[in-house]
Length: 198
Image 1 (cartoon, one colour):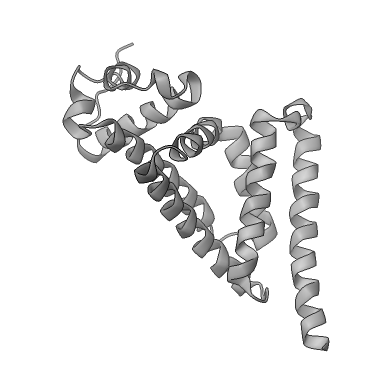
Image 2 (spheres, rainbow, N blue to C red):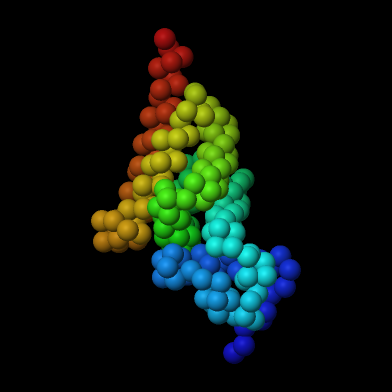
Protein backbone atom coordinates (compact mmCIF):
# COMPACT_ATOMS: atom_id res chain seq x y z
CA UNK A 1 0.00 0.00 0.00
CA UNK A 2 1.41 3.39 -1.04
CA UNK A 3 1.71 6.09 1.63
CA UNK A 4 -0.31 9.28 1.08
CA UNK A 5 2.14 12.11 0.51
CA UNK A 6 1.27 14.98 2.90
CA UNK A 7 1.44 18.61 1.78
CA UNK A 8 2.05 21.99 3.40
CA UNK A 9 2.07 22.05 7.21
CA UNK A 10 1.13 18.36 7.26
CA UNK A 11 4.32 17.64 5.35
CA UNK A 12 6.40 19.56 7.88
CA UNK A 13 4.76 17.54 10.66
CA UNK A 14 5.39 14.29 8.78
CA UNK A 15 9.05 15.23 8.38
CA UNK A 16 9.39 16.03 12.10
CA UNK A 17 7.60 12.81 13.08
CA UNK A 18 9.86 10.74 10.82
CA UNK A 19 12.94 12.47 12.22
CA UNK A 20 11.82 11.80 15.79
CA UNK A 21 11.26 8.14 14.97
CA UNK A 22 14.71 7.86 13.41
CA UNK A 23 16.42 9.50 16.41
CA UNK A 24 14.53 7.15 18.74
CA UNK A 25 15.26 3.97 16.78
CA UNK A 26 18.65 4.63 15.16
CA UNK A 27 20.17 7.37 17.27
CA UNK A 28 21.45 10.67 15.95
CA UNK A 29 23.85 8.94 13.57
CA UNK A 30 20.86 7.50 11.73
CA UNK A 31 19.30 10.92 11.23
CA UNK A 32 19.94 12.14 7.70
CA UNK A 33 17.79 14.11 5.29
CA UNK A 34 17.67 11.13 2.96
CA UNK A 35 16.63 8.76 5.76
CA UNK A 36 13.84 11.14 6.79
CA UNK A 37 12.54 11.27 3.20
CA UNK A 38 12.43 7.47 3.10
CA UNK A 39 10.85 7.12 6.56
CA UNK A 40 8.15 9.70 5.77
CA UNK A 41 7.47 8.26 2.30
CA UNK A 42 8.39 11.57 0.66
CA UNK A 43 10.13 12.20 -2.65
CA UNK A 44 13.94 12.51 -2.37
CA UNK A 45 14.99 16.03 -1.47
CA UNK A 46 11.75 16.92 0.34
CA UNK A 47 13.31 17.18 3.79
CA UNK A 48 16.18 19.30 2.48
CA UNK A 49 13.67 21.63 0.81
CA UNK A 50 11.87 22.33 4.10
CA UNK A 51 14.79 21.99 6.51
CA UNK A 52 18.10 22.69 4.82
CA UNK A 53 20.45 22.05 7.72
CA UNK A 54 20.85 19.36 10.34
CA UNK A 55 20.29 22.01 13.01
CA UNK A 56 16.95 22.91 11.42
CA UNK A 57 16.00 19.23 11.44
CA UNK A 58 16.90 18.85 15.12
CA UNK A 59 15.00 22.05 16.00
CA UNK A 60 11.95 20.71 14.15
CA UNK A 61 12.06 17.58 16.35
CA UNK A 62 12.15 19.69 19.52
CA UNK A 63 9.30 21.95 18.35
CA UNK A 64 7.09 19.01 17.32
CA UNK A 65 7.53 17.19 20.65
CA UNK A 66 6.94 20.43 22.57
CA UNK A 67 3.70 21.09 20.68
CA UNK A 68 2.41 17.65 21.65
CA UNK A 69 3.47 18.14 25.27
CA UNK A 70 1.73 21.53 25.50
CA UNK A 71 -1.46 20.06 24.04
CA UNK A 72 -1.42 17.26 26.63
CA UNK A 73 -0.71 19.73 29.43
CA UNK A 74 -3.70 21.88 28.46
CA UNK A 75 -6.32 19.16 29.06
CA UNK A 76 -9.12 20.85 31.03
CA UNK A 77 -11.06 17.69 31.88
CA UNK A 78 -9.00 16.33 34.77
CA UNK A 79 -7.78 17.40 38.16
CA UNK A 80 -4.07 18.12 38.44
CA UNK A 81 -3.12 14.72 39.85
CA UNK A 82 -5.01 12.87 37.11
CA UNK A 83 -3.62 15.22 34.47
CA UNK A 84 0.00 14.61 35.54
CA UNK A 85 -0.46 10.85 35.88
CA UNK A 86 -2.22 10.77 32.50
CA UNK A 87 0.62 12.71 30.84
CA UNK A 88 3.24 10.29 32.18
CA UNK A 89 1.28 7.19 31.20
CA UNK A 90 0.44 8.55 27.75
CA UNK A 91 4.09 9.33 27.04
CA UNK A 92 5.42 5.96 28.17
CA UNK A 93 2.67 3.96 26.45
CA UNK A 94 1.91 5.96 23.30
CA UNK A 95 4.83 8.32 22.72
CA UNK A 96 7.92 6.27 23.51
CA UNK A 97 9.66 7.63 20.40
CA UNK A 98 9.24 11.16 21.78
CA UNK A 99 10.78 10.17 25.11
CA UNK A 100 13.78 8.32 23.67
CA UNK A 101 14.37 11.07 21.11
CA UNK A 102 14.14 13.72 23.84
CA UNK A 103 16.83 12.00 25.87
CA UNK A 104 19.05 11.56 22.78
CA UNK A 105 18.61 15.22 21.86
CA UNK A 106 19.24 16.39 25.42
CA UNK A 107 22.59 14.61 25.48
CA UNK A 108 23.49 16.03 22.07
CA UNK A 109 22.52 19.48 23.33
CA UNK A 110 25.29 19.31 25.92
CA UNK A 111 27.67 19.58 22.95
CA UNK A 112 25.62 21.95 20.77
CA UNK A 113 24.74 25.31 22.38
CA UNK A 114 22.15 26.17 19.69
CA UNK A 115 20.23 22.94 20.25
CA UNK A 116 20.55 23.35 24.00
CA UNK A 117 18.86 26.73 23.75
CA UNK A 118 15.88 25.20 21.90
CA UNK A 119 15.53 22.48 24.54
CA UNK A 120 15.88 24.95 27.43
CA UNK A 121 13.23 27.24 25.92
CA UNK A 122 10.88 24.30 25.44
CA UNK A 123 11.43 23.18 29.02
CA UNK A 124 10.66 26.69 30.26
CA UNK A 125 7.37 26.72 28.37
CA UNK A 126 6.37 23.40 29.90
CA UNK A 127 7.35 24.54 33.39
CA UNK A 128 5.45 27.82 32.93
CA UNK A 129 2.35 25.76 32.10
CA UNK A 130 2.98 23.52 35.09
CA UNK A 131 3.38 26.61 37.29
CA UNK A 132 -0.10 27.76 36.26
CA UNK A 133 -1.56 24.35 37.09
CA UNK A 134 0.11 24.33 40.52
CA UNK A 135 -1.08 27.88 41.22
CA UNK A 136 -4.65 26.85 40.40
CA UNK A 137 -4.33 24.08 43.00
CA UNK A 138 -3.18 26.64 45.57
CA UNK A 139 0.41 25.40 45.82
CA UNK A 140 2.60 28.12 47.38
CA UNK A 141 5.63 29.30 45.43
CA UNK A 142 4.27 27.43 42.41
CA UNK A 143 7.05 28.60 40.10
CA UNK A 144 9.68 27.25 42.47
CA UNK A 145 7.73 23.99 42.95
CA UNK A 146 7.33 23.39 39.19
CA UNK A 147 11.01 22.45 38.80
CA UNK A 148 11.07 19.45 41.18
CA UNK A 149 7.63 18.31 39.96
CA UNK A 150 8.81 18.35 36.33
CA UNK A 151 12.09 16.66 37.29
CA UNK A 152 10.29 13.88 39.15
CA UNK A 153 7.91 13.24 36.25
CA UNK A 154 10.84 13.14 33.86
CA UNK A 155 12.64 10.68 36.13
CA UNK A 156 9.59 8.40 36.25
CA UNK A 157 9.43 8.37 32.45
CA UNK A 158 13.16 7.92 31.94
CA UNK A 159 13.23 4.96 34.30
CA UNK A 160 10.35 3.32 32.41
CA UNK A 161 12.01 3.54 28.99
CA UNK A 162 15.67 3.17 29.95
CA UNK A 163 16.04 2.00 33.55
CA UNK A 164 14.92 -0.63 36.02
CA UNK A 165 11.32 0.49 35.51
CA UNK A 166 11.31 -1.42 32.22
CA UNK A 167 10.93 -4.63 34.25
CA UNK A 168 7.71 -3.53 35.99
CA UNK A 169 4.32 -4.71 34.83
CA UNK A 170 2.11 -1.96 33.36
CA UNK A 171 -0.20 -2.08 36.38
CA UNK A 172 2.69 -1.90 38.88
CA UNK A 173 4.20 1.02 36.98
CA UNK A 174 0.89 2.90 36.89
CA UNK A 175 0.39 2.30 40.60
CA UNK A 176 3.89 3.60 41.36
CA UNK A 177 3.34 6.72 39.23
CA UNK A 178 0.03 7.44 40.96
CA UNK A 179 1.62 6.99 44.38
CA UNK A 180 4.59 9.23 43.57
CA UNK A 181 2.51 12.03 42.01
CA UNK A 182 -0.08 11.87 44.79
CA UNK A 183 2.59 11.99 47.49
CA UNK A 184 4.39 14.91 45.88
CA UNK A 185 1.22 17.01 45.46
CA UNK A 186 0.10 16.18 49.01
CA UNK A 187 3.49 17.23 50.34
CA UNK A 188 3.35 20.51 48.46
CA UNK A 189 -0.15 21.22 49.79
CA UNK A 190 0.88 20.38 53.36
CA UNK A 191 3.72 22.84 53.03
CA UNK A 192 1.06 25.45 52.23
CA UNK A 193 -0.87 24.50 55.39
CA UNK A 194 2.28 24.75 57.53
CA UNK A 195 3.09 28.18 56.05
CA UNK A 196 -0.46 29.40 56.81
CA UNK A 197 -0.32 28.08 60.36
CA UNK A 198 2.92 29.92 61.03
